[in-house]
Image (cartoon, rainbow, N blue to C red; front, top):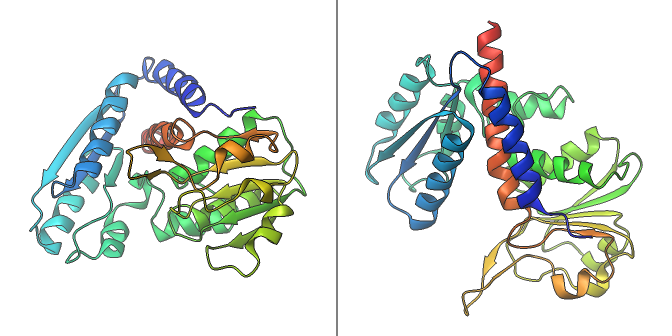
Length: 278
């Protein structure tokens, strides 16, 4: 069975739009783009369009490549104090002269809709999640649609980034699964994967995971998206072979990607509700 991220994301956006329609004030999301990286510009535009679709107030802020650290932090502090803005997102990656960690830590944790602030990561670690990293949270939403109970399942996460791998492992651990974290250099990676009831891969290496490594009946979540020389997009899993062994699998594209943006909207609505309750 294909886990259709586009359809799941569409239903989530419809639900969010229905909730927004009943609110007196529109939830507000500010997205800061530094420089003119084409891929980042596309991501920001997609987020802006998604905001408009569900009825959010959207503020798209473009800053030049040579902005100073102090100037960028000042812009974030301005947004921290702006009552129209419930969520703040700084599009990554940032230019090399900007300290991304300091940027993330400057965002008010209650407006950190990316879920990267150490306070929000700490809450996830303690199983008291508030604003959760979007891609792992989106993956959990996708897993829920399979109806498979994760309790006790052997889950393998390949990739240990702060954006996906590490918080993904915590999400699964909080669901009472048994979790193994690997990376592209893990000794005998194939043996680890052959034990996986649930496999989440996020390393950015095309077709790293071979089809014959997959356990029969496994659930495969492929977070990777890689552009080949011929222009085609592929994941980190060899989809053509893996789909014949897996019970459930995400396509690339059209799998995890749409869920990340839909979850960003969900986080923004959560942040809005928290601010309004105060």
